[in-house]
Image (tube, rainbow, N blue to C red; front, side, top):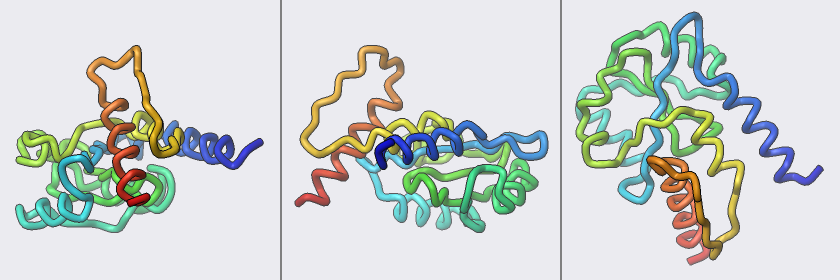
Length: 154
């Protein structure tokens, strides 16, 4: 097995847990890095009175995820250490009304869907055609990851 296949298996196993913790489901949002950085998104949330909690260090069943899930409907978020462009929110968090959601800086996307672009680890310069894209969240995530690869290659 290649390193990419091993990474894909680890990502899929973690993502398969989805975010179900103690009968509650965490909400996940991907930072659209074509619009803003993860740090900028976190700063904007903090400026609007949200609280950043301990990061999710493993899958969504880690202690930090359980603590976040217990904060139902609160204005809290955590970074996801496995997927660097994903933020987790407690069930019922008032996220949909936040300006980051309205301006496309955050995209509501489940963790398993976010795993696709990370597992693909496409080399820079590739063209990608997604013949099944609707509404295209995974495709835009792949585009953002390719843009990051281009920027890093400088």
